[in-house]
Each structure stands twice: as structure tokens, then as C-alpha cells.
Amino acid sequence: MDADTPTASSPSPAPSASSVRLEPWSEDDFGLLRGMNAPELMEHLGGPETEEALVKRHRRYVDLSAVGTSAGRMFRIVLLPEEVAVGGIGFWEQTLDGKPVYETGWTVLPGFQGRGVATAATRAVAELARAERSHRFLHAFPSKDNGPSNAVCRKAGFESLGARDFEYPPGHPLRCNDWRLDLEAS
Image 1: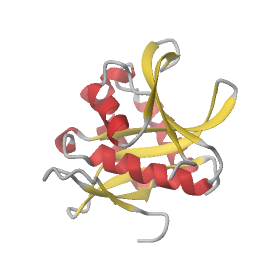
Image 2: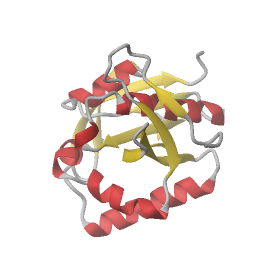
Image 3: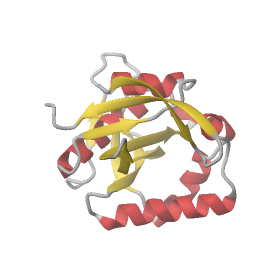
């Protein structure tokens, strides 16, 4: 493991809390992306993507991970000590209200949800975004109806800024909660 593959564990005392390692997204992760495209995982994002859209998304993830600049990065989430890839997470540049910020998003495969994986991975990705020293804020925009993802934001230390409307995918209105983490705060 190098400096770019942090290990994080949820500080929650619950025995189900998980430890994770983030590894850069690679060409070999297309099968993982297919698993993350399951209908139950995409219900708050307009439904599963087509194969063509998945190929494009995978290419963006690989390219973003290869850039190595402050533009952001994508990672596979590896559950420890099992050493199994259980989802994906990343951060990328976004303009929000005319200001540059980072945005984050994640997906954890169904068999691994409810164990603190997403919270541990979100904390780890926030540390990586913080280390870039490029943007003050990291935002997450889970659907208002996505209780588990909103809980991840709360547990990971994000503050709620209220609801916002987005189109995601384009043409599909989505009401989201805007969660913000100050990367300059200790």
C-alpha cells in the first residue's frame, strides 16, 4: 500500500463497522462497475445505465484515476481484511453556484451494505481530497429519498445545506440534499 491508497475504519464502536482501502480505479474494474449498475443500486439515479453508457463511465473513471492532478480521482473500495472489491467512490471537480468545489459519490454492492463500508470510504476519500489542497469544500448530493446515503453524509461529518434540484441523468429531475464538508477544517 502507498500513500495514495489509504486505509480507513469507521470510529463507530458498532461491531459491524468495516475497514476499507481505496485503490485507484483501473481497466480491470469494469466488472465491478457492471455490478454497481444493478437496478436496486441505481433506483435513486434514474435507473441502470446502458452498456454503452457504462463503457463511457468506465473510461472516465480510468482516465480520471490516471490523470493524477487535482481534477480528482476514482477508486474501488476494498473491504478489509477480506481483500474484496465491494464498490466504488471518488471525488471530482464541479462548479457549484459559480465556485469550484469537489463532489463525491459512492456505490457499495448490496451484500456489503449496512456494515459501515460507505462511511469509512467517504472519510478516506475526504482525506484524499483534503490532501489536494485545491478546493475548500467537498459536496455530496444524495437523493432526498436515499436514506442510507444521507446517513453516510451525516456519519462522515458533512453538514446539511438543504435540498437542491438537479437533472441526473440529463432530462431526469432529481431532488437532492446538498451535504458539504469543509476540507480546511481540522
